[in-house]
Image: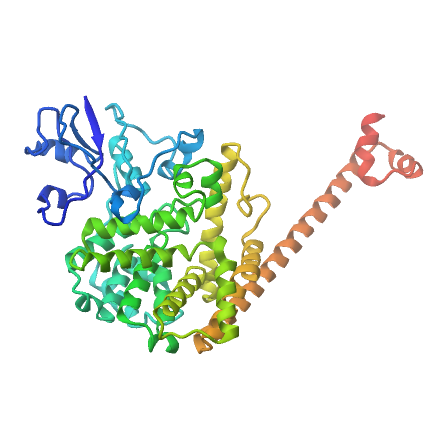
Length: 509
């Protein structure tokens, strides 16, 4: 019998075994092996699902793995406890799993661990014998050369993150973040270990769900590029410290980490354990933050800093990520407007700089309507498709369909027009008051044009629909008239019956 536990957070003064560093999955020990013995190499290559210890081994205590429980309790983090709600089976871990995938002949092994949802999906596929698509990591020099050329213009608001992600073979988030950290000299300044940094960024990119149409690593890279543009604005560029810049970039990179592709109301109404853990308040944002902290600690990215400094960084990182909760939009916007009205934002104060970073990250998170039409349209279609996928799941499981998630009653155009009118325009109008620059005016200009374009497309679709309905009604009338018996039309006219009632009159006669 095997019992599955979670990986430990190893103390810093103990060397990490090579077999732990070399593999991100897990190691399997049979009942005949001890905790500190040498594992069978064949089992290492066969299983990545969980670490299994002999049930009689009392030394295998309190072992943790990724997800929110990867963080130790002394920092104030609580381990997650799973709910028993019947809809738990449709949550993140198998939300996008394809039905009908063939299983291997070996019996499926249940793994009771708390992984990040992306890695849970990966491990479950491995256990079921479903082959993984391994991307080719070597690109032609022409592609890498084009990616380097694009990075020279990374501060351009027209930066095409989709093209950049293709040129980097899907590694846009890693490549962009490394470039920006080096450009600011943050790697040298904070004495970051490049191996740890690279491992951290690889794990962050992997924990974004590629199956999500919108909340994926490309979105994180897009937000990071926008955050860079905002931090280059004159008011911020002359005020932000290197620490502020590091914090802003890390928050942008991890702000949607391990996003499941469904929203907070979905988690609450399905009684998901995350909703219970975070008491229905900023559920996803809390999960993103603690997932990011978990990866920082797992990789030891800031282990060389004094403990107080690293804990302070983690707390401020959480403050930035929590600010992206769209349900708190009015709270932050009112505070921002009040500061601007009273003209009492002093960027010499650390607290005021932090608040501006919060507002900058909020703007970067929803800046898609402010991009040029070719880019904005792609993002609009992606986020709407993610909404519709959630609606499809809710219909399938007989749940109330969330607003804007019903593909039968909503369109991309009307969703985007509503979002721009009530969410994006008020926020970017205040940002333009704070930073009245060419970039701010460009963003407002793009948003106005995009909104008008969606409005025009909506009118065209409405006209086409009305013409189709009119043509169908006319065709039905002609067919009914042709099918009526001789004299039927005169009798109907005399009786005062409309042409649409002709088939019913004929049926009754």
